[in-house]
Image (cartoon, rainbow, N blue to C red):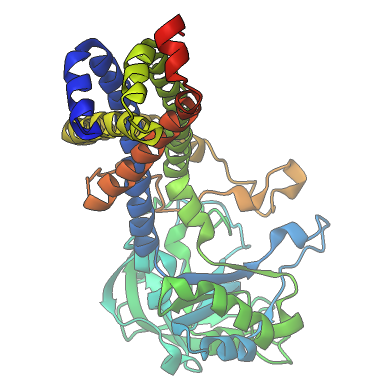
Length: 459
């Protein structure tokens, strides 16, 4: 009788041992498959998160490099340098901005109800922007353009502004009307055309986290128009921050390297944030459960291999007389080892088949429950964040500005588990490896068997 038939008869005649081995392998298969499925699901969710965030790189002041003295001033970068970076082949669109205090003149008044004169009587923030459509609040949908058109690079040197609808209503302004603005030093004055009216859903009483003014009084104007209000401007136009939308998310690394070459020392005091923060915030819970699942998978695989090794080794001891008779009849030891391996492989294949039937449902339920807890904890940490006092970087209060949560980047709290043929192939490879490992160690005992000793002395 060949060893294949003997393996079948052995599995059938020793049902108790076969069931124990099957149960052991089934537990291993379920745990390993769960780990593989969770890793696949979290990888897919991370990829979806990257697509939702978009291929974006932000050039911002590195607040960790600023001092905490009264002469604190954010760095500026020449817009010509930003234009060079924007002309790189990886860039699809880009914008930059700068800000200064402006005052409303000609009878125009600010909206009441917010913070009391954070920029002085009649003063508010004039944000010069190259392309307002690329501002995060407009791209996220938080701000809505009610009438008019966005400012673009074609408007760069024109005198045009976007105003919030509450400021427009208070001063009875519509698109095409004129509003008079004076610069921070109250020397230069110019008339600006209302290019558009937008809506910010933030309450009047909720001060802007960065500038401390009422959101209803924020003005967005052309970079050339607003900069012309500053009599102190003698050199080239400078920006405080910039945003680059890339052709593809995979180009972020190459783009950052190219910008460093193009800008050189002009980047001193700035940092290039390739949206890593938003992605990390969204995928933090995913990485946590993926790490846990991977660790549990390998621990179970190693523990299962150890248990199976003990079971096979015990089987060898129990079947010494059977092996002794077979060896005395001329059977080769290699075929006895092959029989053991075949028995393990058959049981493993059955366990893998059974695990594929219910492991995905169990993994979906368990993974979702675990992810829900991690996401809730991460969201609580985000909700508990408090901005530093108005006008402060937070460094003096022990608050790291880099820890500020990113808006519209909620932690992912859902995954979808799918069983693919590749997952079964991975499980099969791991199961086969465990089975062969469990067979390899007892194989040494088979190689040392002496049929004469077994049949004459029983050992």
